[in-house]
Image (cartoon, rainbow, N blue to C red; front, top):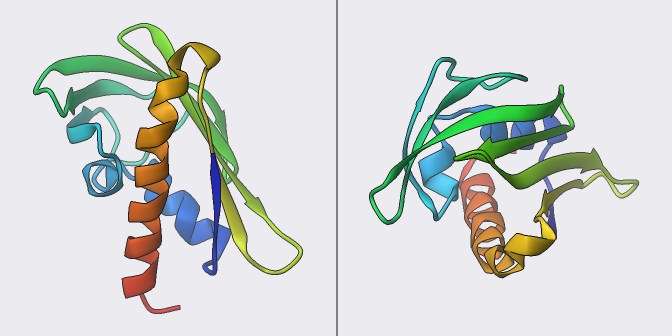
Length: 123
């Protein structure tokens, strides 16, 4: 599940790694508690789901400026990949595990919310 944005990849990346913004763009995230505001490999915390349940998470994969993935409640969850395109746009891709395929709908909403955030910011 992907979408392109007319913003620098560094800005899209910053939005993705800032735990303070997760509830703004993540439909399944209502709150976050983390040992770091900006995640890196090994960052741990917990997320409050839309159902009101707190679940632990750990950042399991991390490549600065390009990719991060995590486990939530010990289960591999989405990957988040940012890449510059030849046309100057920034492409954001959510990688959804096969067993969580229905979650792609939630990722589509997140991509749309990120677009909304990017639209109100100055270029």
